[in-house]
Image 1 (spheres, one colour):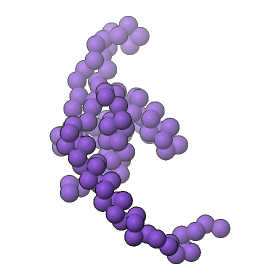
Image 2 (cartoon, one colour):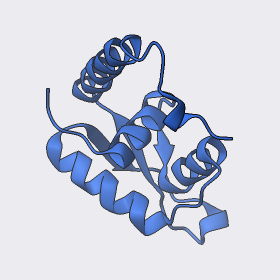
Image 3 (cartoon, helix red, strand yellow):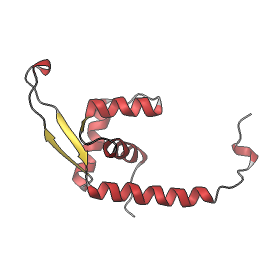
Length: 109
């Protein structure tokens, strides 16, 4: 299985949950899901890296008046990304099955 970072995994899961999405909306979904802020430049870095790996595709949308005629870049996940995340989820599920009785050191007081 190809190596994938946790931020890449989360962003891919967001992409897989949307047909097409822009970086601002990715950041919003990330913040909603994790209750943590993430910068748009951080999202762009990860998207560019994943696009080079063939996990993500992108294209410019149509210019809009609300953006002063500028276009948004729209992203979507590839079938390779779906397979990668699916395989990773399967491996994690197998590992979690082995965590049957965690030691008390993991239980917060």
